[in-house]
Length: 408
Image (cartoon, rainbow, N blue to C red):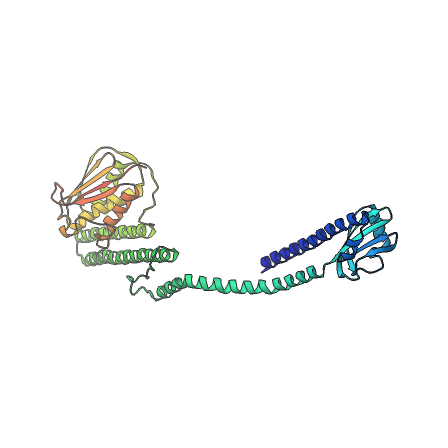
């Protein structure tokens, strides 16, 4: 409203100024013709002019019928007019409250004056002001109603999407928002929200799968640990007690490994594992980790291959070796061969039963991934820019797991 009001008032002022200037130009043109005729001795144009006077000294010697008999110029204005042409705006009898007078000298003591009323211009100005004062609020009201209607029509599908979104619940994670036809912004919004719902549903499925796998993985070692402790308490000889304690230690190690794995999964963002790469003697690290795991699980572990030094995360490398050897032992293997090669490849063979054929090929991002151990190994491999490949082609008769890690 302010902008339209300012433009309206400025436009009105310019129009009135132009009208007043046009009236002044018209009076000036009349005065020029009248002065030329009077100087030629013809006073007829003075009588016929709408408003004109010829003033000699301070007396009116010729005038039109509408002009008064007394001079319309003051003494000061006459003095200035005798020096050159002047334009005066003031109240003039016979012309109204606002008039324009143009005076020009005919001789040192003689002045011709012509005038015109500006009342019609002032009336136009008043009407313009009233028109702007009325039309601007009305125009703003019409624009507001029109824009509100247009915006309401354009955003009606958004209101529908909002209502549909409020109806979606976790009880039906497969429900999606209706996508309006076309390729406008509303349709793009609906597709974007549906994509977000797909990602939320996938994350929910992964979370449920993680909780199911965690509960399943934890149930067995907890029960086994309890059983081993009960056996140890009931043992009559030192040998039986030591065997029970060794079994309890194995299950405690398994619990610790599962806790570390679950913490890794919980902290992983977007399927990636944070790494702290440092130069590491990979082969020596694998030997140390394998020796510890072999003691806990009574495994025969053979480490062969090259001496490899690379920039890897040593803690994550320990997780890889621990999980692979522990998985092999829990599957029933008694002998495991680990071969280290360039460029940073670990090949783990065992003499266990191998993977069930129904699970091959394994997909570690799906809900049917075989437990947390291999899922962690796959995540660590991908975080290092490598991959995990599993199969049942081990020369020992069991499973073969190949882990490839790449340097940064």
